[in-house]
Length: 105
Image (cartoon, rainbow, N blue to C red; front, side, top):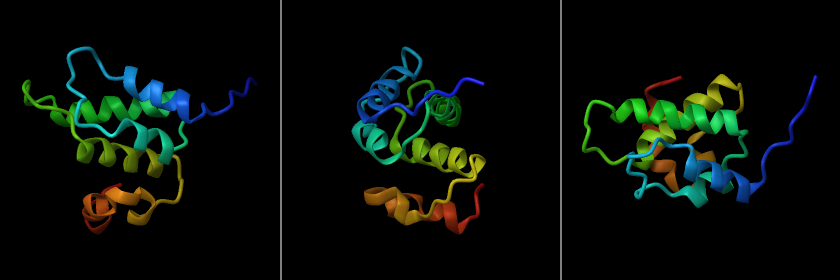
C-alpha cells in the first residue's frame, strides 16, 4: 500500500489550472479559492473538472463557470463522505445553497 500526501495549496492551484482540457475556457473560475478551500487529491480534482465540463458540453461556446464547478465539488465531497454545508463554500455559500435545498447528492 502506497500512501500519497495531499498536495499543498500551491500544488492544488497548479492542478486546478492544468486539469481542464485544452479549449475549455476557465477564465471565470476562481482557482485560488478552489485550491485554498478544498484540500483534495489530484484524482478528485480531475473528477470534479471532468464532471463540471460535462455540465457545459451541450454548448460549445460555453465558458465554464463557478456554479458548475461548485456543484461538481459538492458531489465529489458527498462521494468521499466528507461533511459539507453551504457555509463550507465560504464566499460562494449563496450560489451553492440551492444544491443543498434540492438535495442534490
